[in-house]
Amino acid sequence: MIDAGIIERTVGITRKTLGLTLNEMKEDLAALTACVDDPSDRGQMRAALNAYEAEQKALGIRPMTGEVLRDARKELKLTGSQLAPLIGLKPSASVRSHISQMELGRIPIQAHHVRLIRAYLSGYRPHDWPK
Figure 1: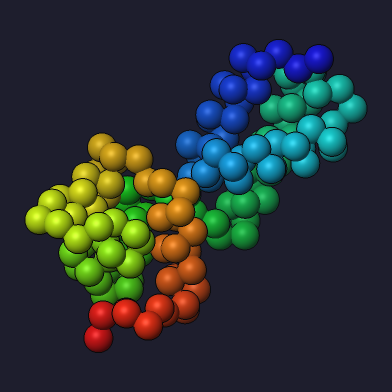
Figure 2: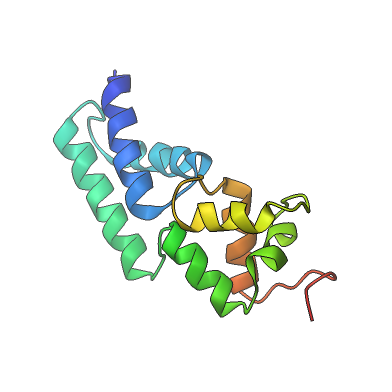
């Protein structure tokens, strides 16, 4: 049986390194657990996670940190006020501040925000995309 504390700490470190959402990491952890002989062996799990992190980095997947969010917003040529409704934030006087706080790492970037931003970076444009 795997110690829940070990999984939680390991997943926390890997999630932070890769910038994955909790659900993405749960799916990946299930796949990793199936790949090792003894999931309760900390060394095997860490080795599997290290290999996974290296593979993700080799594929060029950057963690969705505040800095990456800012780079993405600039690459998309959007202001914070323009990006906010595109990722599901309700229009208000403070949306620009909310995006700024996300970029500074003070507010966590939610899973649905990450998926939308990655889709926009891949070329998807909704009908209400700013001109």
